[in-house]
Length: 466
Ligand code: FAD
Ligand code: NAD
Image (cartoon, rainbow, N blue to C red):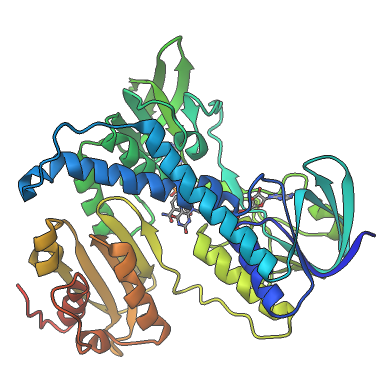
């Protein structure tokens, strides 16, 4: 045995590295094992961070092209240097992964580069990236191995012309035509990036609306806005085949219910139909860890077996970085004998398109299905003074509150900075606030947050700014 640890964490994504930092803070002897070149997991390397850097840069590019002249800002002829944009993205990734390495060092966490496999109770064998093996021994193993793109049977990803999100973050040229399979978060975020940079984007979605898991009103509005921006949609449609030719791809589609199909031309096809837990070669069977039919590791309060825990995308719940992070912290605290807790009812969800889309708590459809009596208030950004001065008036804020107690049960936003605005509602919900609490709280003028307050006022039918 090379070393004896209190905690060995397999996977250094937001779940794993936050678990390690918290464990280090709590004085636990901690190690983290990751098989990537850089720390930070999917989130920092091929997920949240590179996608947000490209969303930011491409949004500025589109704004410069579309809006600057109207504000009296002349910039001459606009041009795109894609190589530089990619370097800007890589810079953001690089800085943040180094930041994770610094935080782990600061909290005395040992890092092992290699693939980890559980070989028995409290034992992790690391096959090192640079050769050789080492065995770690631990009182607690935390599985934080994350997820991978779900494949579409019969369609082989080459990460050049038929890409997953990973390939879509590193294309070397703007495709003429891009077909996106799946109108979920990745499809709309990365579809937006390439549309803004000049691609002709068609999104094929199996269900009858974009972002099917979101509140219906928000998802319908989102569909209308993305269409207005120039994305084409084939809803209630499935892809049956992608054929590769020398310079083109031919994407065969069919109505979801069956019937006559259509063939779409493409230079690049992005497959983004969801993600699945990644547990390949992890040795779950060695200590009797079970998975469900979707491959998610089964647990009771994150305990997957004696001395083994699971957090993040490898297990149930939304596949979001902040959910993984909170679970990592909770598990470190439980291991240290504290009361680790995550409120699964208040996990915000943000789609970083333009406008942004954000939600927290239950949707109107979920409340109806559960037979909950609720009141609703909503307010359009068109009537918000800051949205008007910024020229970003699409969208609205909707707040759902219990019909009797007025407790906020859900909030759904589509509009400028929705991803930041939703934090106020998440805090309110953690404190079990009523809509009246928000309606009576003074909000600075002129800010976008006034739209949140007005939506809360709308729950009692007393909107004041119109
Ligand atoms: P991961 O981040 O996947 O990390 C797991 C790590 O474990 C990886 O580094 C992997 O290499 C390593 N590993 C796996 N098996 C082993 C092994 N046997 N041995 C050693 N190492 C191993 N979420 C958000 O909240 N906001 C966003 O804006 C957002 N954008 C996204 C954009 C894209 C394109 C994608 C793909 C995802 C995005 N997500 C976003 C989701 C987010 O990335 C994940 O929810 C999050 O990374 C999950 O964290 P995790 O720690 O569970 O796993
Ligand atoms: P998703 O679940 O968001 O969307 C997948 C979409 O594909 C759904 O609308 C689904 O109906 C559709 N679909 C499924 N099978 C299909 C088929 N055969 N043909 C056509 N459409 C099909 O998944 P995603 O966009 O791949 O993203 C994966 C996960 O990554 C997300 O669920 C999310 O947890 C995470 N993520 C989060 C963010 C963020 O927080 N901003 C960004 C990117 C990814």
